Image (cartoon, rainbow, N blue to C red; front, side, top):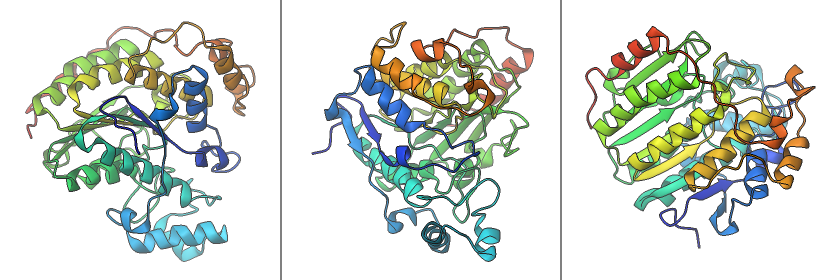
Length: 376
């Protein structure tokens, strides 16, 4: 019998993330979901009764959003470990940093299976953490931004199919959640909110882009600190959610907004993520938290493990357990920062807070976002 997320939060994971990689040299050649799972176990935070293995979604389920010919091309590329010119051009498989790799259909299909299962488990309420989800750039008919399947879209569609008609998608990733926004553009049932770095790929999500009234975008300058993030949450994101009173919230926690991430120039500590999760929890009768970006295994694993603690209302100690420290010391990270990692990456989960001044543009961005607050 599956656990009831109304009683205790449910954790959905899979060993497929430990066994597959995008290939050497790719930013996703690092362990992330497996590190998070290992850490929450090593901290003593995961009761086996709370854990569920993510199933692999069927092609029929994936076709709720994705084009059948595109899915067939993904399966061909996985089977052959090669992609033909026509499929590369049409579906962007093997192009634009969307590599051909072992498990390239099974892994995203498992991410989607996990998030759709989560949405179904949450039909009557509760909390689910599915760190393997969050691939928010995927398009119906092509790969995009390391994302082959758009599992947040599929989870939101699962809720809509249940008859829910008032949903919020909140995206904390450093990159704009373009695939999710575009999937629901003009749909009054889904409000997408994205805090992301301005001027960064995919170069979408301008503040004035409201996708027919169904989106609010907060493009922030490089160096965004914890104080500024808190201002955006308190004066923009939370007022938008409170005004809407959603039946369910899907929270994407891509960890590339952390200061140590190599693919963005924001400066958050994981305290900002944990505070955001805590502030959203009381506003969500159904809360699904997924992962997303994040390209430093130490910072991603520590951030997502701390999110699980927040969801369970568990205190986060100043020092990791010996078992958790061993998990962190066992990681390999081939970028420059991984050659001599600071000791606190091993011995603590919590970053030092990164407070700072609030630049005038941040306050203006928050005020602009709540103008003409959308109601369901």
